[in-house]
Length: 166
Length: 160
Image (cartoon, rainbow over all chains, first blue to last red; front, side):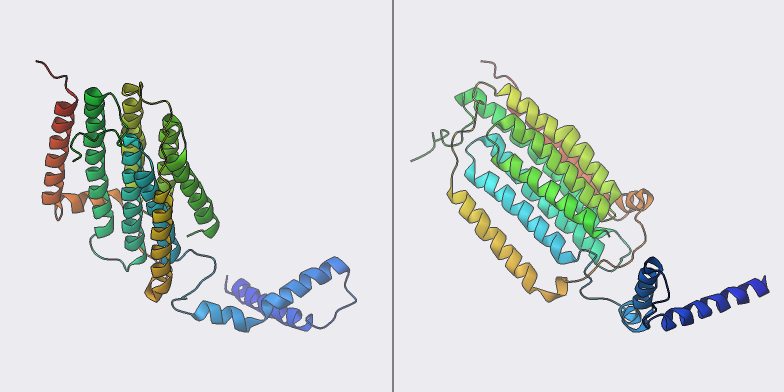
């Protein structure tokens, strides 16, 4: 057991040394192996990799999405909802727009919960759950109102509902 | 968190939401509304809030989208196409998006990556709902009952 461990350590060390040597032009190797060796040489230069890994909290990591991009997606969703609520004349479209805006708010809640340090209670998730419940109630009442207005006026175009207009 | 998955889900969600907001036919818009919520639920899955994602699928696609489709069918005489389109809404929405994006990008404290947190289990959510959040839970139950009764009263046939 112990022997095999030591052996493996030795093997890695030897391998590193070989790679370091192979950083020089090594023409005696066939081209395919040369490619592999060169790649390994670039990988084996220890400094940049360790620097990146040693950062405790990398501020701008290119590969993982930051909180900002989630918020921007949420802002785009909110703007699309606002577009639907403002520019359509059909009452159901306006409700769809309001639902999209509420969904963007829920996405913000969840994103802020995920990116904050962990707390004892999952507050963001709780707020999102309650917000979903309330928006479901709002959708039910809103659609019932659309049906009631349609029964009365035979239209769902909000521009024609102008009886109270002075 | 995977960057490729994020990009795919973001494009999917925003395209579906844009279709829901701008399609001429109301039924197509309602269906793309449901698709947009599928994308949003996958965002929640990506963020590690699986319970909320599932609740979103059940509530929005199972209930709200079906409710919207039924409302479209019940008000069918009026629903051919949505004719009017107010172009100033586009300007206001673009201005809103620009302002929000500008302020988000300007806030440097938001440029953080997600810390490692323990996975949130349904047991934790249930315990929190039954202990700390029990009064809000009761209030939401009351609100849902009131909304149910109110919706029924609103759509009941008037008898004279």
